Amino acid sequence: MIEKLKFFLSVTGNNLWQFRTRNLFSVTIICLSFLTVGIFMSLANNLRATARELATNMSIAFYLEPGLTENAIDQIRHESSLPAFVESVKRVSAEEAMERFQASFPDLADVAAGLRGNPFPESFELRVNAKASASKEVVAFVEGMKKRPGVTDVMFNQDWVEKMQGFSRLAGAIGAFLGGILILTSFFIISNVVKLNVFARKNEIEILRFVGGTNLFIRLPFWLEGITLGLLGSLLSLVLLFVVIQVFPVYLGASLGALQELLRFRYPGLGQALILLGGGAATGFIGSATSVSKFLKV
Amino acid sequence: MIELFHIWKQYQKPYWALSDVTLRIEDGGFYFITGPSGSGKSTLLRTIFREVLPTEGQILVNGVNILKIPGSRIYTLRRTMGIVFQDFRLMFHKSVFDNVAVPLQVVGVGRKEIRRRVFATLQKVNLHQKMWELPGRLSYGEQQRVAIARAVVNNPEIILADEPTGNLDPELAFEIVTLFKEINKQGATVIIGSHDRELIRHFGDNILFLQKGKIVGKEAHA
Image (cartoon, rainbow over all chains, first blue to last red; front, side):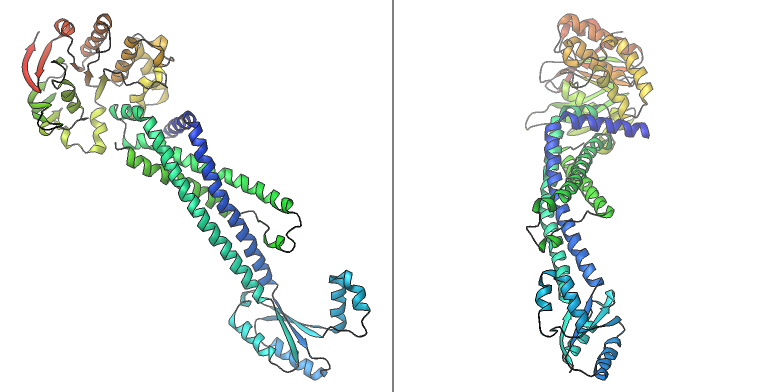
């Protein structure tokens, strides 16, 4: 069995080397196709991770009307802590809000200090269970609190989470669409390259038929060729993807500002890398198998 | 034993490449099929290894109706035969050794055994010293000997040769048929399609004369 496998691998290797120029061409096309898929995949990865991060740190802030009594404030705290999805309620005083502002925007610290009074309102910050982050109950609760007397405004970052999730789905869809077209192209290219290889080895195939070669014996090297081309192309695309991920943020520098965070690529996980490799092998196999069955009637 | 019953073959109307050919080829025999160009020699040989399907008739090889063998199992028939062509049909990018090894590789013989048998066969055709040469660097006579070595390396029961000396000068042709005769002496049935009268007169044990697809004569010499 091992000897047979060795034999077929050596035949495949020789055949690949014999028509190396056209095989290199098809590897390049497969590589570019899978690189496109990979880039969008890693972009979607980042957006999905950002959305997940936002969802995990999801918080709701209720800003309180100035001059509320302690009783009224306690009542709001009590109501805020009632829903099961609320994990914690923290009261943020006006002074603490001012300190946070000064810490976050040091350039504007002097401006804030020069003010006659403290313009920041007192608030409650609620941490919400990540699983319930986008649920209808949370939205209904927030809407209810908005109308409640004593609450002037509500800050809720659910919109951002949904936007991130939407962008992530969009990036995934664009990647799947563009990648799909390109993979289809590589499929046809492999099919044609293998077809050319079949024609170039017509004499050899005929000899194999005359000496009693089975269909499998004749077809297997062509299938292996297709699989090898697909695997090499997708492997190369993974290598290039890592290079792109390394180089891209450096190249863009800070020119994208806040968008840079969103456009940052994340390395594909092991599962995704295996999917890309498997996809390459499958594209190669299907491309060569269709060509061989069509042009190699044995 | 090869038996052909009422074989008809038509490639294009109204011409018949073979018309009602019935014959029996005994095991271990040495046969020449002869006749002018277009008489149906190649078609007859090609029907025996089922490269060509007859329009009508039956062919039995060792009692098996080869026309009933499904396409995917034709290899079982071809493994019992060695086929030699006028144009040699060699793989010119592979060495003499690799060319001769092919029939053994397709049946899954191990590497050591392949090396032993290919070397022994190349010794028989006196080409063992050119084992690693590419066929393109050999003379026509040597190339035909490579093709013969490939045909006999797995000891087939039947050797079919279609104009094996067509591209060779008379001396080399004589040498090649002598080689076939030796292979026949070792037990294989040899059928050669040829129109070389000199060779047939010299070597022909059994001669079948074809004309316009019909067998018009048979000769048997002891």
